[in-house]
Length: 148
Image (cartoon, rainbow, N blue to C red; front, side, top):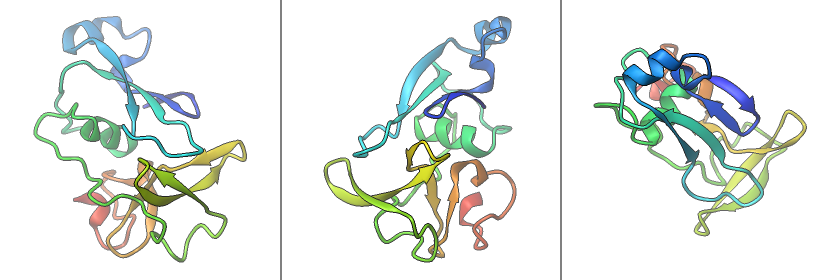
């Protein structure tokens, strides 16, 4: 996973310079994540493979983005619960409440002092962890829900 800017990501083989790998696996396309608007934030722009790929050896943030945009073969998106306004009650005291998808109240948090972000996974035990800590072979939630 490579970062082009705070709201733009490239999956490894979609990086410029890896042309032979891109030709062999699948051309890259641009997607946004999440696919619904969150008031006050920019959606993350992703460069992902055009066709679904084997995600057996992909972890963390890259796995979240690929599986949740339907780009993994035989893999399910680990985000089963939307991040709502009451998620992670003991964390992120500086949260800002906002509307997502014109239908539910959620929150965002200051990110790098520049803008607001919504890149958190809601664990079953009411904790939240950043996407980069989900499906990374380490129990970051403390209840295993980030590794299912």
